[in-house]
Length: 262
Ligand SMILES: C[S@@+](CC[C@H](N)C(=O)[O-])C[C@H]1O[C@@H](n2cnc3c(N)ncnc32)[C@H](O)[C@@H]1O
Image (cartoon, rainbow, N blue to C red; front, top):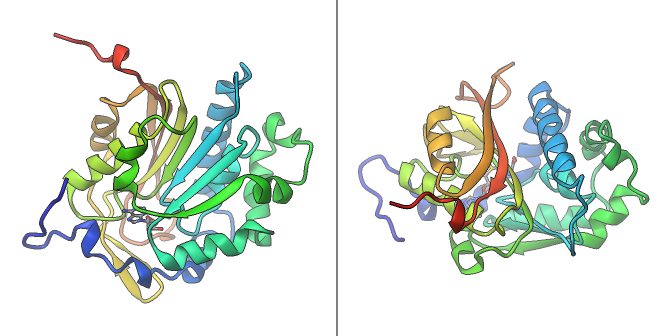
């Protein structure tokens, strides 16, 4: 699908993703654990923990789409995965992610500690840094190309990406579709969205966003997900500028047979 920019629309391909400053972004968002992220971690760890109460029949591969400069979605998938792909378009963020693979920075420990309140994470029989190093692969790429990898991954996350990469509602919905299509039927997923975002800074550069609320998020998931829920966390502080709250969604990828016909 190729969309054209018109008027004030800023499409994903028009944005200077290379100008994304991962260090400024981490300093602003993830240097210290914020209450909203703790709440999201709580939901996601229990969702994945419940799903894998029945042990997986084979190796598990995870993908975090638009990983940027956030390791906590990957940490949330760590106990089950033999491989985790961190897919990212910005070369600056790819470099940041690569710099974290061998031994991630100390600020991520506080996120791991929240996950460890669920026994599955606490019972991991190896140092999370060692497991992260073993399983994580950083991949430079475009999430819209995931259409060529339908059903490839057995679990997935996409945090603050579909609505934070374009002003176009069509591209937002397409982003959600590409993410979910990359997952195998039944695969558990978690996604997070900024609610009614007007755009954001990552360093000096200003990045576009698409104005979505819980109903748009819900609608974008319906064709591709089953047993899913969404919830709204209201903005606790002026942490991430220009938005009214966060929306978390979690569930499972559906399969063709789940879609009613006629
Ligand atoms: C707001 S940041 C979110 C980063 C991170 N997931 C988080 O939770 O903080 C949006 C991310 O999406 C990435 N991105 C934008 N367009 C993309 C695309 N077409 N394919 C893959 N990643 C993309 C950006 O480079 C950036 O890292």
